[in-house]
Image 1 (cartoon, rainbow, N blue to C red):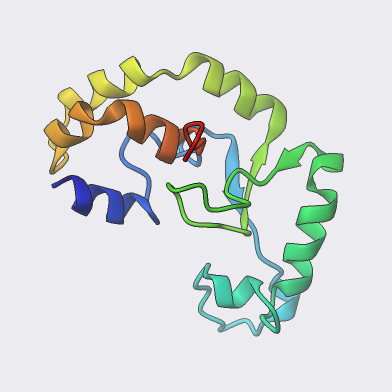
Image 2: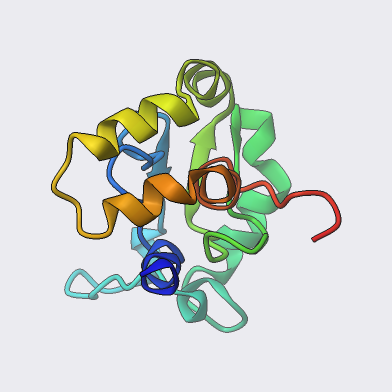
Length: 140
């Protein structure tokens, strides 16, 4: 169950842990670089070398902070996959992460019908660092 949960959380937040749902984060793309009927994928190829959003990705890495944002998934830290399209409002994110807690998430999971919730709660110490705050424990 744990491996299934980790595989899902590589690309999808568990209920109660999505930074998008906190109201602090959003995914961005450059609509001028694609046709109106383009099917956005939000994948590495779109934001990598020769992708339609390569320049946007480079710009975000250089300038996001100047405009009050950061890239919480700028690097793969053993939890959430790298997401060069995902930006977070610095001030609001820090505030929300200050009031959100591992215990709050555990309580929400216990009251949910999410498949695998007992495994998630049992392993929440590591999960919270890897998949919510995106911090890798020291030495890993």
